[in-house]
Length: 586
Ligand code: B12
Ligand code: SF4
Image (cartoon, rainbow, N blue to C red):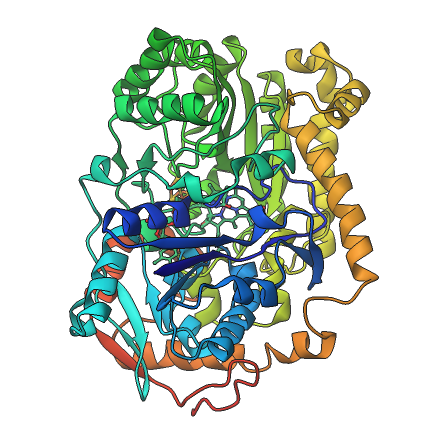
């Protein structure tokens, strides 16, 4: 029996549509394990106890208590797998693994997901987990299970890192799977889809129809310097057969009466042929669904023809992620998105009455007051083009990204309590960190406010055709009722009000652990990560990154990744107690 755990999710006071949602990664892992003939037991902490909230740093955990999760692990489990997508979940996972090991000392704990892929050595050094599965997980987890069960040599399993008596060993990465149509569909029968829906954990703009996430493609061919995708998936985009994606959607309509499908793709729309086939198939089958691209897409393939097909097939909201109105900033972050192509695409989408949102980010390390100011003219422009929603996030230094390495190697990141918190604060009113030279958190907060006022304020409301459809007040009032939302603003405001209230309520009760313990947890994490990084640089596993982030756009990350990810290496560490990590040797 293999037990898989989706730990409690993290929320905090912020205005964002990017809320908690069904965990598609571990649902894929559950399906792969079932396909291999093994029994799977899933503990979905969020789906099982969606109403439980406990204070966690500046926010709260949603879902089962950590002790309760451990109590639910079937005694016959030999292996427990835990998904760790987000860095802000890591402290809770460290504690969870410690409790699992205490209650079930013989169980082997396997971690997978974005966060541990970006920091495999650190994840094993700061927790009691036994294995980390890096990158795409389906093939690797099966080979790991086979090897453990047959007592084979784990040095032969590509794509894993593991604990050794002297430290941590990292095997070379596994090549991306190209036959992705044969990957079994997510095993949603282990998850309570209705519970997620009832609590509005839909990951994007709210819909009253039952929501199930879809993944139509894997990876992304670009290599933006702030994004974890190149490290996680390598810069390679692989689409599924669009007809099979529609088959999957239709099966959810029939089996679960689902009607709303947010796509979780990194970059769903790249090839025009693909999206035309997909939309035409939905229309021909007469599927009355809504679908969304909430995570930010590229603009190159969206012209008038595609936009009309998107609308006719039920697409209701899409987001473009140029990230900056400044061409210079876009060049420095390797966004490779031309302003004119973006506007042509926005025009086409608006003409088809699609709900278009734009994502901007402020506070990149190389941002200047001038580049931030360029966002204002850009905002005027998008408002005039009829863009309906604007999201402004503060830059997050995500592990595994080029910018993270540059900042860490030049001493500008400390892996402390504030670091592990700053990611969720990206969509709050005040950032907890600024990584931009000479621009502080208050400046960034003012800049965000100015950008919002400019976009939603009277000046642009007069010119924006989409805003004439309803007043700001009626948008807010409509957002509070239970009907499907018409804009991301409605969902963001409603989520903001809810999370403000829960954050306040949680701060008045006992938190997930004692405050003093919460602070102590981080005492040595920066030193541990620094030690690992230094060991990797001196061992020629990686090279130091340039200290000037303006240099990054000149490099091709493929060579850097290939050199690190084809190696097998060991980092020496002394045994660790994850709460008092004071035993790392320098
Ligand atoms: C869709 C998406 C969302 C959705 C839903 C995410 C979710 N699952 O809950 C929404 C829109 C809600 C969202 C929100 C946010 N997101 Co987001 N999101 C994504 C995106 C684009 C795709 C994730 C996905 O579904 N991938 C597909 C699945 C199949 O992959 P997977 O989960 O990684 O699983 C595979 C492997 O990891 C592995 N695996 C996973 N678990 C396990 C477990 C075991 C035991 C094993 C063996 C293997 C294994 O196998 C799986 C199958 O191959 C990623 C980008 C990316 N590179 O993937 C960002 C990403 C995950 N998001 C990110 C961020 C920062 C956020 C936000 C914090 C943004 C914000 N400031 O608000 C919020 C956080 C919300 C919250 N409350 O926690 C970062 C996370 C980085 C980090 N280290 O923390 C990413 C990586 C994007 C980036 N910029 O680089 N996000
Ligand atoms: S930010 Fe988007 S376009 Fe850039 S690498 Fe990540 S997924 Fe691709």
